[in-house]
Image (cartoon, rainbow, N blue to C red; front, side, top):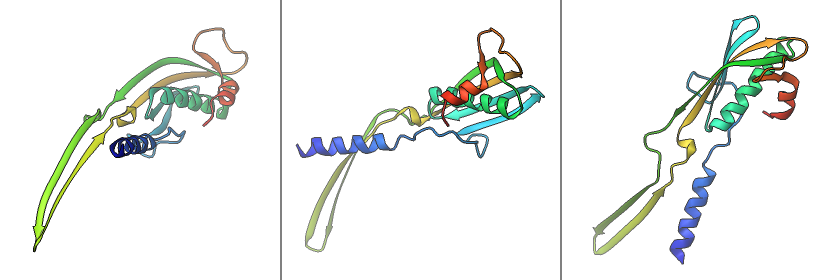
Length: 157
């Protein structure tokens, strides 16, 4: 019973260690967050690196909407999208066992321990890249075209 409680507590702590994706600018090239640069006055390349592809997609879309609104446009069209997943080679479940003995003076000690590591999706990250073209006026009736205001209202950051 004691070991079941210990295992449950370790699993709960491992779950707490999973980072919650946050919308933010990336401080360095490989850091989590967004990076963008203009290609033309109404065309941008945007990338978002996050611990999950779903979050990277959402936040890249949000960044495209922000840039569109900030530049005085009403809508944007995704003309190119790619995703790249980077995983940590040490991810995955693993078990480690350790033990030791020692003596000091007339006392003797014996110790042991068991460790359990659980790899998660946060063991790596996903980089989503978008190339967007922005426009003003009524949104064209084409797939991959979005109203900037609607995206900003629906995807929180």
